Length: 162
Image 1 (cartoon, rainbow, N blue to C red):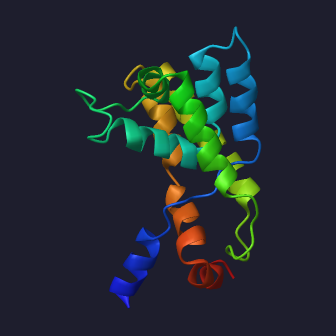
Image 2 (image 1 turned 180 degrees about the vertical axis):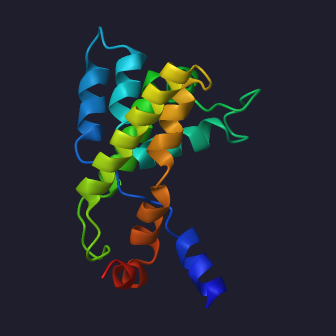
Image 3 (image 1 turned 60 degrees about the vertical axis):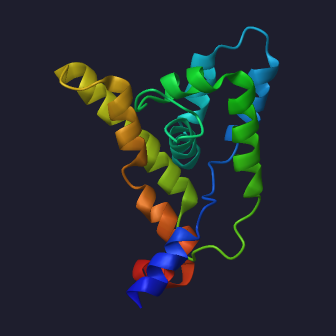
C-alpha cells in the first residue's frame, strides 16, 4: 500500500497553477519596460510554478554553481524568455479541474500560501535573522504537500478532507 501510494504521488508531476498567473507573466513579458522583479512578483503568487522554477535552476541541467533559494535570483539566472516559456507551458497545462480532489479548495490553498509567504517575509525582515526572499519561498511552499496530495491521490485525499 505504501509503495503504491508513493508511486502515485511521484506521478503527480504537473501540479495546477493559480489562475491568471500565466496571463500576467505573458502580459508583463510583452511590455518593454517590465522588469524581472515584476515577473518574479507575478510568479511568486503561485507555489507550484515557483517550486518548478527553483527545481529547474537547481538542477544539473541549469548548471548553477551554488544552490539558489530566491525566486528573484532564479528568474535572473533563467532570463525573461525561459521564464515566460516555463510559466506558460506549466500554467496552461492545467486548464480545468476535472478529475481532481473533491473537497479541495484550490483558491483557498493559493490564498493561504500567499498569505503565509508574505507573513514569513515580514517576520524575516523584522527579525533580520533570515533572508526575506528565502523566508517568502519557504512560506509559499510550506503547504505544497496538500496540492501534491490533491493532485496525486485525489480519491484518497478527498476521503481525508471529508
